[in-house]
Length: 140
Image (cartoon, rainbow, N blue to C red; front, side, top):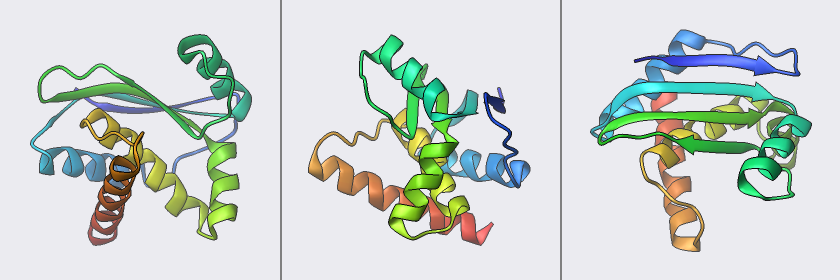
C-alpha cells in the first residue's frame, strides 16, 4: 500500500513529496483509516476536462476529480489534479500556489474518507476539514 505521484501533459514536480505522503497518511490515520493505494496524477486543464467528459459526463473544467476505490477503512483511489486550475484558483483566492495545491490534495483524500461537498452544509464541513488538515501540515 502506497501513495504515488505522476504527471501527464505538464512539466511539474511536487515539492516535499515525503512530507506530503506523511501528511496524507496522518490525515487518514486521524480518521481511523488505513492507507491503501492512492495515486495522484497532476495534469493540465485539457486532460482533466477530457476525463470529466468521458467518465463523469460533465463538460466543465475542474481542479480535481477523485475516483474512489475504498474498501472498508482501507483508503484507495485515483486523484487527478489540474495544476493549471490550481494556479488560477490560487490567484483568484489570493493565496500561494502551494497552499492551494495542498488544499486540493487533501480535498481528494477527504472525499475518499466519505466527506461530500454537494450541499452547503457538506461544503462548509469540507472546508473546516481542509483547514484542519492544512494546520496539521504546518505542524509536521
